[in-house]
Image 1: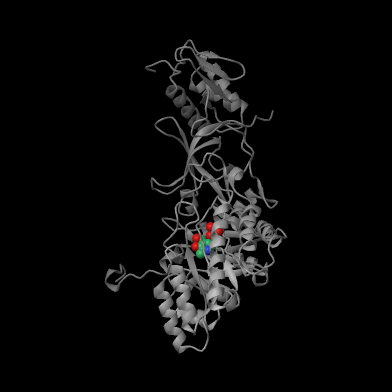
Image 2 (image 1 turned 135 degrees about the vertical axis):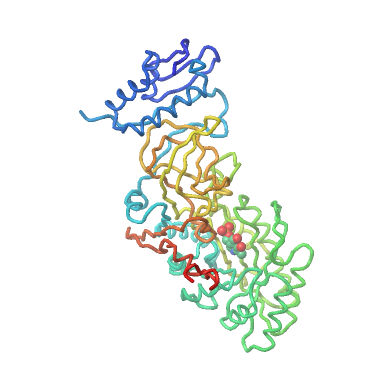
Length: 82
Length: 451
Ligand SMILES: Cc1ncc(COP(=O)(O)O)c(C=O)c1O
């Protein structure tokens, strides 16, 4: 899954999509994940990062991760066809 | 190194301008304790879901209501509306605090007797009183509020053969300026039916007319409607006195005061719009005091307040079963509380919050119950914090009607506990078991698999 290239993410957790003009808010863990996605990291790397930092088990996080990326698609923040 | 507290990742679209149907995002205060007892302990001990009633809140509310009326009017008597919540422990609290009983069926009548209420402290309302019910009520000198002419004739017939004189009132419906006007119960004021019924009682000779009753509706937001209703009953009382030289002993204004719950579709929350007991008391007592009734003959004012007294005292504790994404991207949270035990979710947007502190992040959420039915929606649209499977929630202000109108449907009804004024917790209705249901069943011999 790839984020659209022109998405702007601010440090305080705002996302701006210049294509649609829409903006979004993120919670802190979502900022980290979006940054990792922008760096081109995949789900395994992201899970490892989160599991090391947060008190959560792999199943729970992966479940939440796919839910989250589903929302990114829903909001048209990802590249088509991946 | 200790790991950071986890919260699932969240992205929300920022909508400029007006709030949508999910409302403005706002921080939600968790309810972690009820009357100083941790929610978590209650669930650990009594299961999830569990109904919790607070004796303290019951008493506080009743005393607020009493104060509002007794400071304005000399003779006030509350009667506990059994249908609102007829758990014996609950009824006993009200009776100990001085409330009489208001019942609407033979079943409720017998419950009141079993609860030790004196026969002449029971108000018997409703359209369905059997001949046996009426005979019993007449014997016990209970206050029978007649709903229709057929009932009046049954009472006349019974009075012919019984020693005791029936103590009667009629229920009266009327136009109080509110919509909808409830006209299916009792006798209509405007078309003369009420006067007709009163005349027949007065002319009978074997019946005693003791009161006048109305119940103008439920969740009435306009105290003025009570003022109008009270004036109309007072006019009838004056007319009876003029024509028959007979003074009625009481005027019963029924129930119907709103609780602070928010009605579905309401623009503002109920906490902002609900009139106070003082507002209702002012309207009712002013109408009585300013009526043509001779001040020396002022009748006792009866009140059958239900939901406004007990809604706040009840909470329903439950657990998140799952989170799920709907096709349009909305989040849905499934909890273990369904509409079968939260009947009032059909008309209220219930106050529902987490039982543990959460971050300020919320998401547009639909909260579903666990029933395998499409109608099982607890909140269609709410800004709700991120909760994980297994975490607990609290639904507040559910003390009225749920514990009487509930349905067993596909599962079993849970424990109901009471936190007494000393903070001791008591089970006041045990959770059902499979046997609670199957013991009533019977499989005909020929269908019995062991044969
Ligand atoms: C005759 C009568 N009295 C009292 C009540 C209690 O009403 P509420 O809970 O609205 O106060 C009802 C409820 O429907 C009723 O029918």
